[in-house]
Amino acid sequence: MLTILQLPVLNDNYIYLLHDTVSGDTAVVDPAVAQPVLDALAKNNWRLTAILNTHHHGDHVGGNLELKQLTGCTVIAALADQHRIPGIDRGVVDGEAITLGRHSARVISTPGHTSGHVVYHFADDNALFCGDTLFVMGCGRLFEGTAEQMWQSLQTLKTLPAATQIYCAHEYTQANGRFALTVEPGNLQLKQRMEVINQLRAKNLPTVPSTIEQELATNPFFREDGLELQETVQRVGKKPVEVFAAVRKLKDEF
Image (cartoon, rainbow, N blue to C red; front, side, top):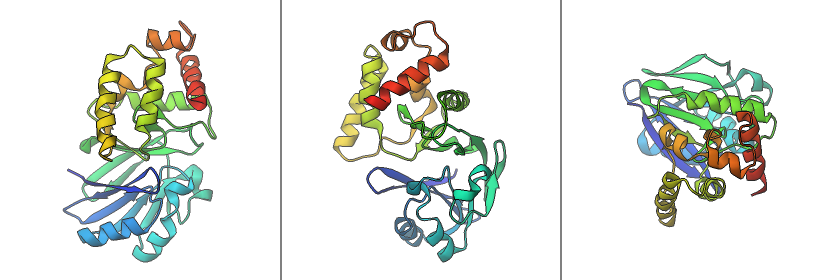
């Protein structure tokens, strides 16, 4: 299996180091800052071979240039964002494959949070590195894309295997869960999950990763077909994207 190391940085960001034990290749996903990555590489005696960026925001690419200068790694990001990804070497598009030693990931285009956002799905390792498209019980704000685009992006992610581990880029879970309870107060699985999450955060432990299965049961942005949620946002019987847009608007104001 792919070795995955989760590094909490800044206020609530997560950086991920991915390591193939056979080839020795190591990738970092969304390095907000360089030093914690360099420290982890040194501690584990790993060599950095690639940077995988999901989108161009500074808290995802801030460490690119320093890491590239010090390690000679290859920077991989969306071709559509090549003009705003520091140090980009390879632009990728939807459906393209990238490799890390024996491991392979499919690039999935997920516009919505930004116009060029991509995620990386390591199917054989049941791992999805989804940046700011999907969060535990949440999704990214619509900074550049439309509700239609984000909804379509999430529909794609919903079809991934239920056991897929979701490695998102932020520890937003408690706030997301508090909002989710306001739109689906009768969701028993959500209530039970929040109890566990509150216990984890009380110990300063991460709530990430989640799974697709857990999100289908508790994430309001995956649950536009739920009657209680539709009633809360007053969109019973409306098109799914309209329900999603109404939930996203409520979350923006929460």
